[in-house]
Image 1 (cartoon, rainbow, N blue to C red):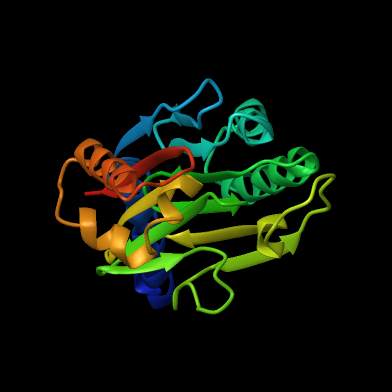
Image 2 (spheres, helix red, strand yellow):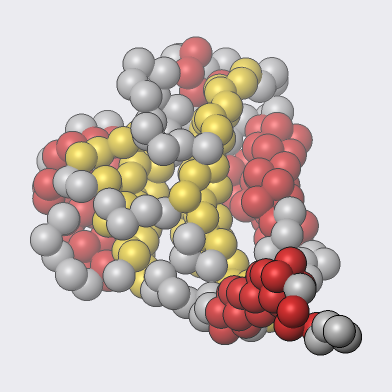
Length: 254
């Protein structure tokens, strides 16, 4: 008796598996890059011509790839750190494959190569609203609010995240002198944006010299508008008589 295609069980299983793979592939391709919407606000209090600089840049590389670059830096070498990232980060990005590796390497090179003559900066790269690369050096700082708790990248006395991908802290040789040895160390962290990731603060030294991480988180946690949150944070630092430049960016994930 001649047997048909469907008379062989393994062929039926193979067909079902192939159809399942195809359906999963279609779902993956339809997944919008804005699945986790990103909103932001920033505020700077000008005190001199050499005040801090705030950078925000968004690139929609394709339907599947959206990249944000946020940064706060001082007017000197810190600004050159961000300029390096702007010139190299968005070059030849065609898909999400390997993008995290490139973001991390570009930020590492920016901080290492430009930091040798001094400077202070903090930056965050957001990929598709799902992944983060964060770096800081000097008095500038990145603090993440996760379920109402403050987590500072580069804090060697505290584990940053139980779901963290990787964290690196390494020294940089400076031509100038720093009062604090930690000012010459780069903190670089990559991790996923989870449901408990509420928002991120990128702040200059003028914020953190008068405010603890958790104080800053508590102050703006329930302010829905990130622009109002950034303004509130900067104004509070001014009210506390901060003597350094005051700038901040608040990034929210809705």
